[in-house]
Image (cartoon, rainbow, N blue to C red):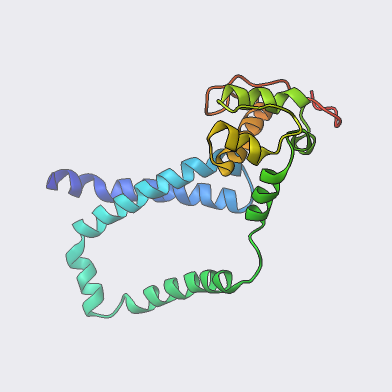
Length: 189
């Protein structure tokens, strides 16, 4: 195990760093964000693990940085940079727009959600029925449909949005539902 650590840890850490840094820069400039985000997040977790092994392997050298106090300024700068983002965001009194959107969606009628998503009236209903939701009427609110189906309202909204996004992309939704036909007043076909 020690031989493998000595041989590959730094190379794996460097390779993961290059991929995660490259995808991070691309996403920062909004290039391929939809395609890269999941890969970026999972490889970043692997990067943390590889960096942990790298630190373990080089513990003596790291302790030299600590004893010489060489690590103080880089660590202070990194923490200050993190605080520059975290502190203002945590002190902000702005409401979370995502939470408001989810509450509005839960209280919306199925027919209205179809209009907002610009899909045929039967599209969302068909996708939700395939996912096990009981729909009595297109005038029912999403929260009522979720309650009648024995599912939490947020689950309903998240599944509906995911299903519609998957349909727009031409892929099956995570629940393996077939893409439903897209179309509506805006002319999407």
